[in-house]
Length: 165
Image 1 (cartoon, rainbow, N blue to C red):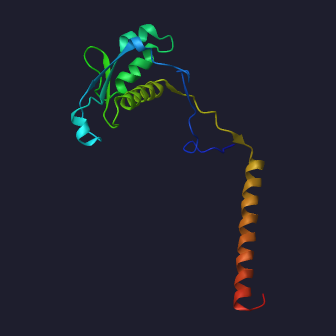
Image 2 (tube, one colour):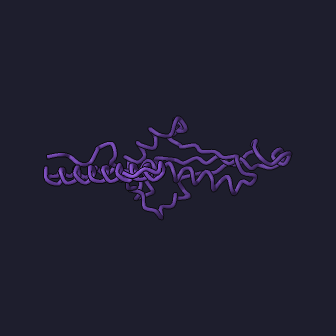
């Protein structure tokens, strides 16, 4: 028996344990604004448009039924050092001119991080096995197709050179 599916070509199916309509509870995070750099010219010096969002992970674990300890553990591992000793995830944004847009950007980043942490790879399906007869039919089909292409190339070359074959 020949295994027909190459393991490197198979894609892993991924599903998320976090529901698509999940909303971060407001009691789990706090938002602070401050003056930041970025687009806005001299207006940056007079307005507080930089947003820092702090998510309390312990509070999130207690208040949200959709978040479990495994998701929090994966989030801690993948956060890249943005978690404080007080178990708060810190995300900041100053890429937009308004604090409202920066707040949306921070919330979007946190949601993306939670969704990535909740991803679960499904095991790949077992490889299909083909009989020797099916394998030989596939080889014969490829050989006939190759012969047909060679014949077409030689006919085309003969037409171009003007010789009879």
